[in-house]
Image 1 (cartoon, helix red, strand yellow):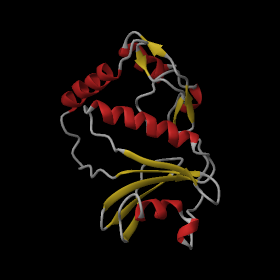
Image 2 (cartoon, rainbow, N blue to C red):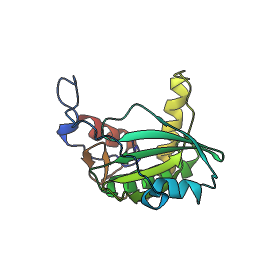
Image 3 (cartoon, one colour):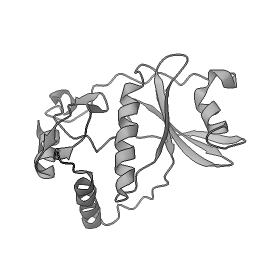
Length: 189
């Protein structure tokens, strides 16, 4: 989920009753045979500096992408794939995460690579962060979020410089003078 680019979210994202989101079921992850056919494995084994992938495990949570943890001898990577959406969604996510990462306020995964899958769709490779089960200090989180928004404010105001998405919902690039106004527009409109 990208939190940097807040703007107007279309009402399709938030049905009035909130019982379930109406997203299509995920397509199963196809097993790719050769390294030349698997750009995720290629990146991990070259740019990710791994010599072996020791385990790939499913990570739950999302509703439109498949999410996996790739454990390697060089560390772990978080990989999201979507077999029906091109790379634009993940490119926006990588830019948003990169901008949040650069503020050094809230711990977010560092994005490494976005690309197209040979069988269609796209992927993003990120740093894997091990989160605990504790909800932590919510007041401290609120202060860190405010810090992040202050650090991300430009002469144009709060917001992000490009259109983006939260899941399948489009977020228009807008700038606001107040981050509170920006957030209310994202949540309630």
